[in-house]
Amino acid sequence: MKFIELAKKRVSIRSYKPEPVSDELLNEVLEAGRLAPTACNLQPFQFIVVREKKNLAALAACYPGEWLQEAPVVIAVCTQISKAWKRKYDARTLVDVDAAIAADHMTLAAADIGLGTCWVGAFDPKAVRKVLGVPRTVEPLILLSLGHPNENGRSKVRQPIEKLVRYETWK
Image (cartoon, rainbow, N blue to C red; front, side, top):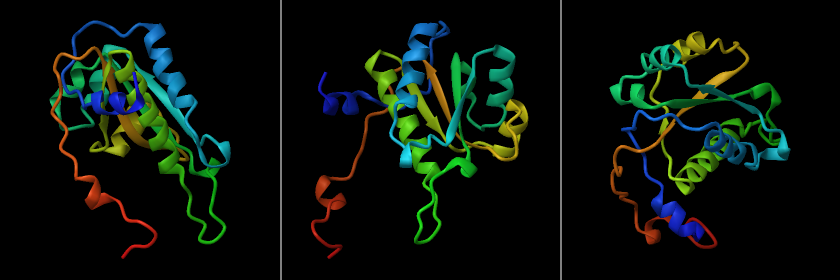
């Protein structure tokens, strides 16, 4: 499949079949995240894979949408700011960007093998930290649901390219 077709195919899935995700498929998705580019190749993130029902239920309680409980797997993408590259001009880190690229690689890999994902950011990070035992030096950034889709997902509505792209300068 051409990349552009894969990008079009990927949609957010908020309903999952109860069947588990095999270790083989899960590892393929995780490997895609591991291979993602990061600033200076520092890989300032960790993935916490949650599969046990009681842990999934506790994690779902940290998010207002009930559908998260249906996902057979949730991957918590956590950032480690102390390991992140810092831009010398303003000391800004790209830790969230690095983690987002890894999460995006995982969503695309999942779509490629027929799995669904949904990127969740509207959760209580303190509650997720407690549920997953995340240390204070690590930040839960993204919850990525993963499973066999039980829906087609919503159609994508995107801005026309002309509204998003500028050439040479902002003007």
